[in-house]
Image (cartoon, rainbow, N blue to C red; front, side, top):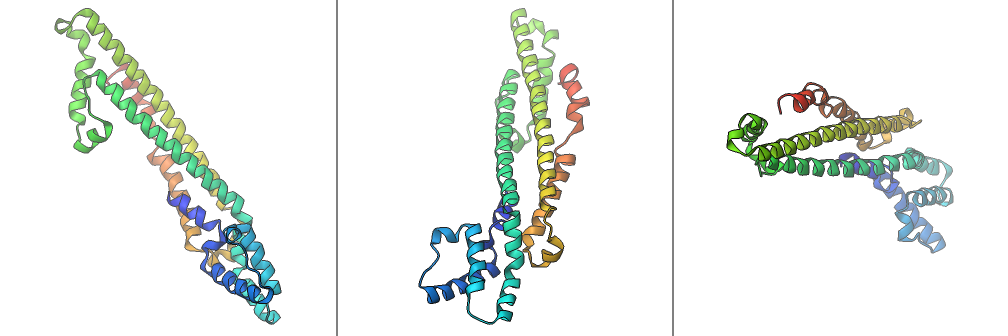
Length: 252
C-alpha cells in the first residue's frame, strides 16, 4: 500500500508543490490575458496539466531570463512525470493486482486451516488460534488423529478408515496450498524485480535527482526491501523440502 500511494503521487505533476504553485500563477496570468480558465476536469489530467503549463510559460508576460528560470524550476518535474507516467501506472496497477492476489491467498489459507482442523476436531479459526497461541492443543489433536489406526478399539473399523481418508485428503490439500504459496512468492519477486528495473530506467535521474521528492527514493527503497522479503522472508525452503516430506510421509 505504501508503494501504491507513492506511485500515485509520483506519476502526477499536480502532486508536486512547485508545479502546483507555478501552474496556479500561470493560470491566473492567462485568465487575465485571455479571459479563459482551464476546466477543472482537465486540471487533474497529468498530461493536460503538463501541456498547459508549458504553453503558458511560453505565452506568459515577462522577460526571457525570468521565463527560463521558471521553466527550470518545473523542468525536472515535467520530464519525470511525463516520461515515467506510463511506467509508474504499470507499477501501480500491478501492485493492486498483487494486493488482491495476496488477499485471495490469505482467504484460501484461512479456509484451508478451518477445513483441515475440523477433521481432527479443532474448530477455532486461524486468526483466533494465533491470537491465543493455541498451537500446542492443535498439535496434540493432529498427533492423536494420526495414531487412529493403532486405536481401533475406540471406534469401528469403518469410522477409523473414514477419518484416516479425510485426514490424508486434507493433508494433500495443504501440500497443494504450499505449491500455490510458493508460486505466489516467486511471482511477487519477479514483479518487484520488474518494478526495480522500471524505476532504474529514468534517464535523467542523475541530473534531476535532487529536485525529485523524497517519495522517489522511498519508492526505490520499498521496492528493494520487498524484493529482499520475497527472496528471504516469504520464501521458506523448508516447506518445499523437509517440512513437506514430514507432512506427506512422516510427522503431521
